[in-house]
Length: 109
Image (tube, rainbow, N blue to C red; front, side, top):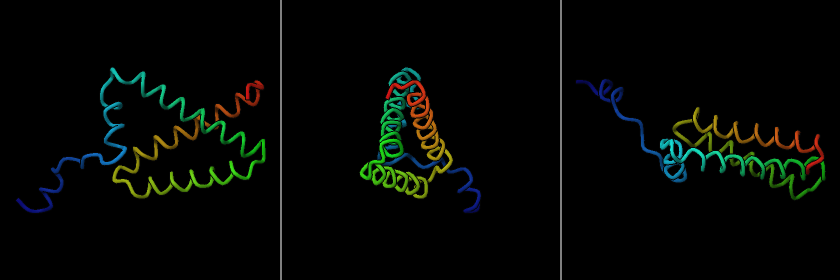
């Protein structure tokens, strides 16, 4: 067996860092309600940040937003599973934008 054939059959690398802890919630269906609540809370925090940055014209919020975008891009660049991480990060930002637009339209925030 050649080295190329061995690499094709190698199992995917194990998650490290934060991914190791979050993988438990993704893999176990009984923990999905907790994962959904976590995603919604992070998206609501992002919505508040977006509203403070764009509607409130807060320089601090703009700086935090710039730092978060940079950290997200860096996380996608560094990970081995770029598609999966990019999907989760895109989901969180899309939900944040959706919550910010809807709450602004309904005058909730």
